[in-house]
Image (cartoon, rainbow, N blue to C red; front, side):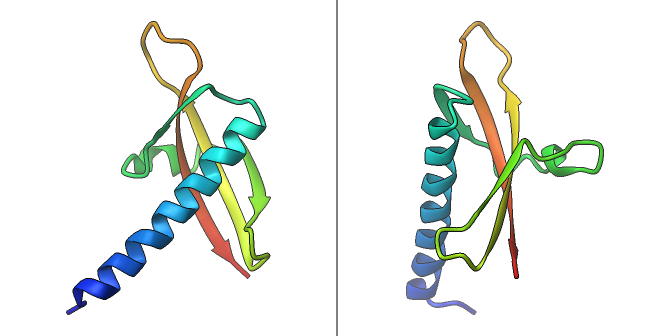
Length: 87
């Protein structure tokens, strides 16, 4: 069983990677408003391919980013999901 401190540390890593990925999407101008969709695993299934990939900030692996446009009347809203591969 994990302690509360271990759970908090794991959560901070996820938040750091989430902000790193969202900043990269904004930098590449792929969307104005970004929605985290890490619970949507269908985005990462075999027929879909990653929109782009980039190295992690520490150079220890690669982050593959999957994007999909959100339905509705708003323009520039994209949902993202990512997969981290460590070397």
